[in-house]
Every structure is written in C-alpha cells, then in structure tokens.
Length: 272
Image (cartoon, rainbow, N blue to C red; front, side, top):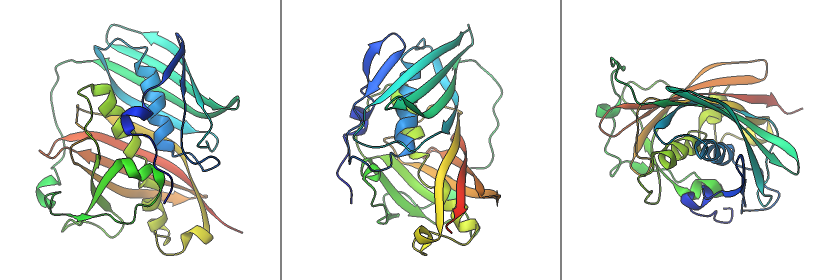
C-alpha cells in the first residue's frame, strides 16, 4: 500500500499565486502516477474559486493529457471564458514541470426552477451500506481517503458494477467541496468496467496483458449531494474498440435521487 495522502480537505487547499493561478503541493510517493480524480477535483476547485458562489457547477469535461506524478507541485491556470447571469464557464490547465497534464472545462449555473424527471432508483434494491461488505481490494494510496462497500443488485448485468462510496472523513458544508469529492471518486472504477467488457477484470492478470489509462472524463451534477455520506455508484461499459473503452456511471443519494451522471473514455491497449 502506498504512503497515505493528506486528508481530502487538505488536497483542496490550493495556494493562490495570482488572480487566475493556483498551486497544489501534491504530496505523495514521488514518481508514482498521479490519480486522475485528484487532479480533476483540484482543477474544479481552482475553477470554482473564480466563480460567484451563487453559481454551482453543473458539468465538467476533463482531458487527461499526460501522466501526472506525485511529489511534484501542480500549477492550475484558470481561463475566465464567460461570466453570465445564468451560466459561467471556466477552463483550467494543470501543469507539472511546465507541461500540461490535464485540461478541464467546467460550467456553473445559478439555481433555477424546472420540471423534474429521473429514472427509477436502484437504491431501494441495494443493501444498507452499514451491512454491505467492505471492499478490501482497494490498495492504492488515493483510495485511503475513500470508504467503499460492495453491492450486488438482483437485476445487475454481468458487466455492471455497483458500490456504496463516500469520503472517509467529515467534510464542511461547502457545496464546492462535495462536488470536488464526487469528481474525485467518480474516477475510481470506469476503467475496470471497460476491462471487464473485454475479459480483463481486476485480479485476472490484466496488468501484464493490457495498458490502461483514462483519456477523458465527464460529470454532470444534477443536484447537491454530500460526499461524506454514502452514495450509490453504478458503472457499466458501453462500447470498446480501437484500443479504447467507454463507460457510463450514475451516482445516487441514499434517499434515491440521481445526483450525478458520469462518462469516461479510456485507453485499452494490449501489451506487445
């Protein structure tokens, strides 16, 4: 198991260098590949720091450009693309050693009234998180800030994956922190779902036969949700081919509301 990272709240404590420039110390094992969920959540934090608090994040699209590394500070440059009455748009580029490792576009929306619809919730078919089996397979350092419990639904397909997940520490009431936390843990699992679709699940020796990496990651935030309370995270692969795989995910609150939707495309390249 890797060395413990700072608490999640500490990960979001960015140094303000200038009006549109922020820096994360990025502690951890030097030389190890940086968890994409960390840099995406920090980029969202940087973007939100330049936005009117009345505007809440409604979506983000992150491209992972190069492997980041722990132990190297990350600099976030925010481009204030648009400030509107209803919507605000930001672009963030994260760099290490002067090279871009992530590009994130985020949209923020002021609260408005509107008609509501969502599909039937899977939460009523899931066991209570307090009695669900803890997920003991998580060994990477970035998993240490997470608590995960396994769930198997009666109607779950062979390629679907469901977990109760939360940040394993109390978080402040700031909605930006909870949106960043959802961004963080939404990057755990999509590539595993895509690997299962091509017969390379965790524990089946895929490490020696396939190179995997997240390419781009999208999150749509439908309603506020506390990430320090258990959220039901469902994933299913949509398509694989041409050395890429696309996965779709949903995050549900414990009272059965759809809080966020996720898609991620990743690299699935056979080793030669």
